[in-house]
Image (cartoon, rainbow, N blue to C red):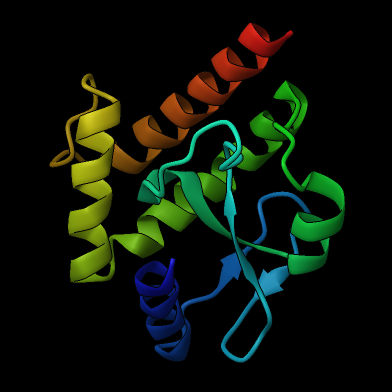
Length: 136
């Protein structure tokens, strides 16, 4: 995760703010944050960029940990996922990685459309929900 974290750090230093999708805590330059795996690495051991979002480290380490979020949490987090993906698009490197990862995982999403981040965030919510349903 070193490369991904370095790229997020650059965005933060450029003044981009993230919001933890789970706690709504603002993440600014100099703030401590984790890169949360939306689908925990114990279930999906791949660091695809769509699955990595800046998050409140306390919540990520002590509450979410290796659990899947509930559907209600996912619905509440979806606009924040969309904003994260939008911010990733401001970085040439992150944008390219996000588009490549999304095209590999979500064949129905077209990356060169204005709806890319909205479609991706919805697809992520649906995929996580499928993971959750299959585990139950």
